[in-house]
Amino acid sequence: MTLVDTATVWASAGALIGGTVVWLAFVYERKKSRESLHRGVGNLIVGLEAELDLLRGWATGGESGLGYPLHGDEEESRLYYWNAEPGWRQPQRFILPVPFPTIEGLVTSRYASHLREIIPSFVNLSFAVRALFKIHEEYRQFVLSQSSIFAEVVTLINENQGKKLNAEIGAIKGGHQFLRQVFEYNHQMHVHRIGTPESDPGCLFPAYARARLAFDKFSRRWKKPSEPLAYAVGHLIAALFFLAGALLIGLWFVAAITPGIEPGSREIIFSWPWK
Image 1 (cartoon, rainbow, N blue to C red):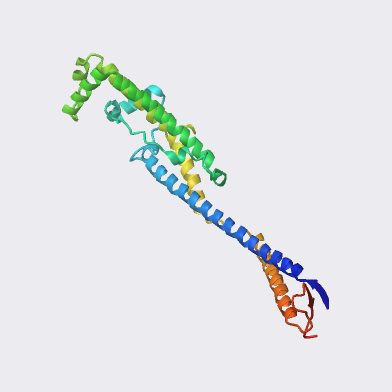
Image 2 (cartoon, rainbow, N blue to C red):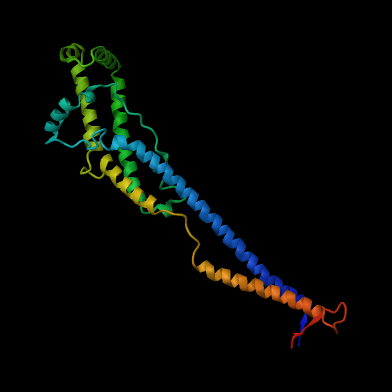
């Protein structure tokens, strides 16, 4: 038989069971953290996919999907596109530079550390988009700064759809020079800022292709973070702590009803009745 103080029994049992409660609270918080991470990264994946889909039309060369290669040298390329892309000489054609908040904010996202494998390609894509929008803004400012010529040329084009207007454009003071500059801006945007898959990495087409490839690979492999295997050891120890605490309390009650213990005594004799 062992003489044990009642307070010591309850303090020990409380510490053992309390340790189990603390462990369960820790596991619950970590589970909530993993769920929050899964939702956060999942939302980023949805946002990135939507913005990549929106970029596809600009980045892959429109309906052809082949981009805009440089045909020969610069002069040969200008001559080719002058004939092949008459729309590049229409000053009323603008793109809407919509924002891409998910792509642009990826680096500063709270989940950036979990997206390390795709961040470099998306940083490059963000740069390519900004470069395209920058030259487009210069183009737009140029067109709008020539408001009188712009209005006359656009009116003439709209009233004579599908017709050759070389003489009519020439009758507008500065008309030919204005349209040549409009074409130059469009050639720069399409050939040198969008390009083809083989273009400079800073061009939109190759930047988009790399970002899309990295994104598809990441999104296929991303799954909800699972509970670490080491937690199994923690669960086992917590269960043993709880059982040990419960056993102490059970022994205390057994000893409390054992004959020979004075009522109100602060010391309990632990005995094993079955011996």
